[in-house]
Image 1 (tube, helix red, strand yellow):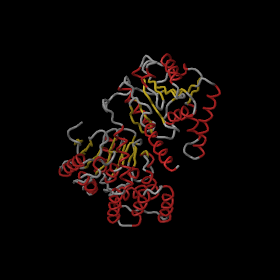
Image 2 (image 1 turned 90 degrees about the vertical axis):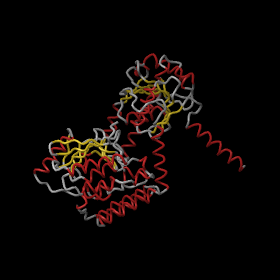
Image 3 (image 1 turned 30 degrees about the vertical axis):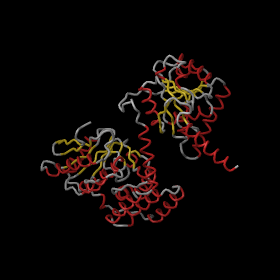
Image 4 (image 1 turned 180 degrees about the vertical axis):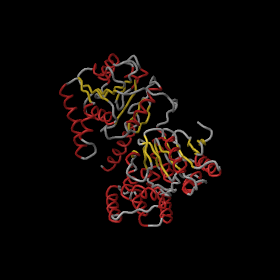
Length: 501
């Protein structure tokens, strides 16, 4: 990691300030200070005619450093709001070069620039609502001035990521590119200087929407019906609405007050705790973060019952080619029909298109023999919980699967080491316990056997993220984590019930 969180480069008369705080340029105090120092340097240098602010290839910035939430660091100057104000007030053109992920405070930082150039596949989001918050550095006020009221509300309330290219018809980006975004931003900055382009300060734009108030009421009603009592979604609607109904400075003050109130709410504290716990669960003793992972392209599933087909759908949804094997033709047909029915239901609900459903089914390859799994990079066994049956399956898989293929069991409580003993590749055996229905439930227990290789463990953790799951690592023990917790719940319920009899 670089000792300085920013790099300062001079390309002719264009200063390029590169955010260099891996892995995602989180806007902690050190990076905020580095950006402001570099920016001040550019403003003082008479040679510099314009500034480009850029991130790494994978991340412009993922936003605030959540580790600073609730600490003195979050309010230590320069706060993000001060940095944004300095950029927006700059007398020289400032261009944000956006690529990779640009989220939360990172997007608010980009909105402070006079111009923005982005790669089309850059991913944008204001995900604060998922932590029970709203954008607190002007995002609810600047975004609607560039994309309109309705688009801004949908974007902020959902917290979902959107490709930069989807904003091509708005004022959000002055240029979209498929090439080197820094080179494109530097070229744009040069044109801004030579053509004497007016510096567009987003705060000075107006939100014009003849249907503004009726739409706001519609949005309020919709959010109240769907937010399940969480306060942040409705407050996001109200905050974006202030961009339409109130002067910028007043709206900015109200946004900050709302952010601080939500930060203190029990809902936000709980959501932030859960997020921190998920991140902590991804850290594994003895597995360095930079551990190389195995390449997974083709996946196999043994068993087309409830668990097997749910697991298969999870992989199909993530873009994998999936071979699913049953030893009984009728069971295989039932499984395929059930998978097809799930996709048809998703299509009726508008979650996927008919084309997407057809494309996913086309990547599903059924088979009645283990040989269909010969090319799989990972095979998940999902047969019923019987050690003799599982031992037979793993002996067969060990024979047909290629070297380097990972063999995983979906067992909910059985000894992974005993299962691995039926193979000649104990290092490649791991537990992958999905919870039913596997295509819906987010939790996956990754069970580490005594011989499970480090790269296998790292691969399975990365795979869970690809599948949109939250992975937790368990050692080998009866019931692992989830079922041991469930046993305690059941015991408590039984004890309370017996006390009433």
